[in-house]
Image (cartoon, rainbow, N blue to C red; front, side, top):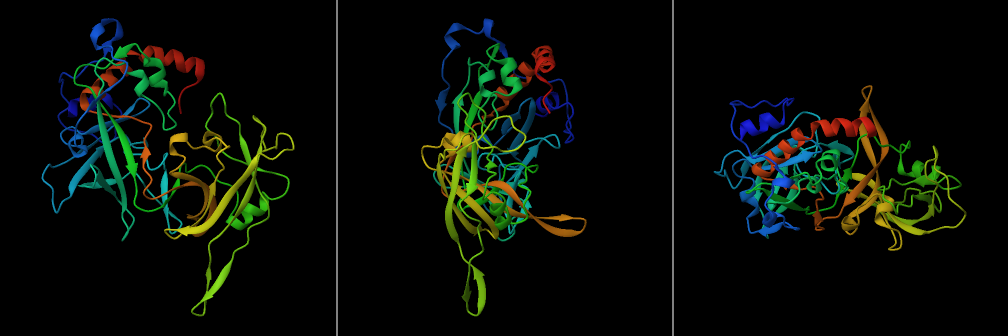
Length: 392
């Protein structure tokens, strides 16, 4: 196991001992694969979720970067199995919260969503992975893995992004190599108990320091352009508030407390490829409902879109539409020793709503084959990067 990981992660900062020359599973050239193994679909395999984490555990690929998550000791302590994750620093790893989260906001402060500590056996075939942080209310993710045999199937189509599009590795490998015997892939079904506020990326800001100021900036002529998932049918959508939002309060036991409120935002088509957000035409598409409330101490404005607006046009996969709400949250951060507040684009993941992670996880046999296919297509990758630009 360790040798396989050493071969896959030559630049890893987390080093393993015992990196010896040990045989690992190889990718099978498609031309050499027996015809009988060329199955069009993966074959379902009955397997308890917790078993996938034992031994070498599960492997994940962020394009051509390989990571590993496994139970360190099969003997549970007070029902908890300690887990370990091996990954190069700075890489994506672990499981995706919602459609992907760089941080989770609690009381306005960002918490790292990629530091698993242990897992426990959950209900209905799930395990519960608890992450570092969260205090009295731990960061806990419910995970159910569905196992499939990938033997004889092409490797490339199983290497996708969080938006379910081909990664550069997946595009280059394509159907050139297939999985060998013993290769297993896992689909991950994810769920949380209560609503959480997620920040998909740490680089996106709105330029506003409060939800009130954010709504005021985008009330009159200039709409706010929503991030969308690029597809052939993508139609970017802009948003404008019917009127600025003002804080509403009531007196409870002699103290003023903010109360939740809701309203409508106007939706319109916007132009593609412009530096600033500009409305396309004069017609309005529809209205979205907004809700302003606190979730785990974080002040957040969430949006619910009408059915006629495609979810990809406001940046959410269609299969996640019922579970995720586009949102804008007030985040607290420290700059020059001062606490500052900024409104970040985010997502609210609704508690009790299950999400299918678009990205596959793999057993060690499948992961070794993927690493081998990545190595064999290294020159093709260089040619692809020369034409399309190197992946950042």
